[in-house]
Picture 1 (spheres, rainbow, N blue to C red):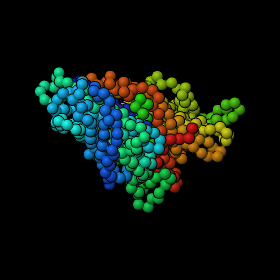
Picture 2 (picture 1 turned 45 degrees about the vertical axis):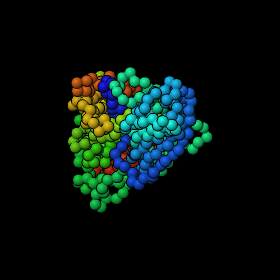
Picture 3 (picture 1 turned 90 degrees about the vertical axis):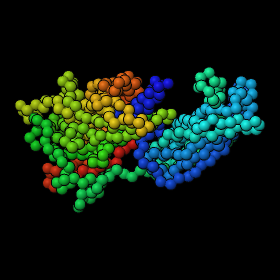
Picture 4 (picture 1 turned 30 degrees about the vertical axis):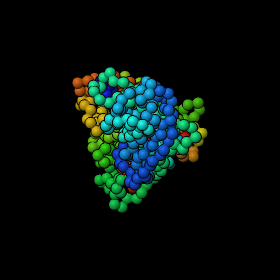
Length: 510
């Protein structure tokens, strides 16, 4: 039993970690932190038909509980005080194949459909009798099961509807040892033609991410500019960090925020804002260090080479993410995840952006992209029907810490993370004529997929690597990161400064 329980906890853990390691917008992934204000008391009476050993019997079921009156997209809906009251004829448990007992105990599982405008999933609401129940000499048996209901999080505005579905009962004779006692498993189906809705919770749109504005600064596109030192210029913004390349590079910074999906678990987490509230988004420092040109099929293509570095308190990493996730049927899991830039491997193929490796920008000063950076290779032309393609490449490490399962710490150790760095390639598309889509200066959406490597060094006293590998590691994890407008403090006057925090997009046009 202990081994089975640990597996239950670890599967829930893997669910949570996957989403933050990579960020899906569905009811199967839960990001929980706040409780909506207000409440509505629900009480729904339903008719089931259950298959007891003595034969099919009609069963009356009342589902009662408290639901929030309203919710906010991105925040959890937490039903409370939910209980399932099951009533059935005495003969169902005292007749042939029954328990033949004066008292019974046991548990139940109510299946509930949770739906919004986009999708529907089935949740399991398990319940357990708190004390044995005496079987009356005549009449009806009434069993009240307090239920454990996992929170769910709507990812967009709309109404979230909770409806009853299937029901199972597992009953056994109470008293004496817990072994070799008569028990029975009962499966119940909802009689057709009923209104099985338990509650409907309207969810309003979440507010746009923003931060305090520097005195005198104005609101900018998509969001507000966070306060920063030096007249609204974030620390580290506008500094050159690439050796070689042009003598007069374009230097600046922008904010990144977005979602990283996990394919295996169909869930997502927001990447960018720090868990401690010290950063509204990830800061990306930019060094546009060179350009080149070549004629392709009679059209002159201009290749611009830009390097980016993450900057969180002078560390090359995203702000740490603290998130709570839940897979229906499992316990809530909270973990802190850290994504950090790593050095590029020595065997990285230059053919991905060969023009950025040449020494042609400044003769005798070739650029070697080996430090922890994001390399952005832009292919553009003056032809309106040929899109601008911006390809960003980097390598990231993922580390996991401060894990709790249903509020209980789970020791994963100080060095839990992926076995080697993860290659991430994001692409932004745009056009010159007319201007549209993504550009480094104007920002916009960047998309791509990543393969999450296997895990290593996870677990204290027990190796958790295989479970994390099975639940998390794998290819085709979609990423959607939104970049804000580039702030260039070296221009006169500074353009785009202070940088804005963009609204994280949930989807892009195909």
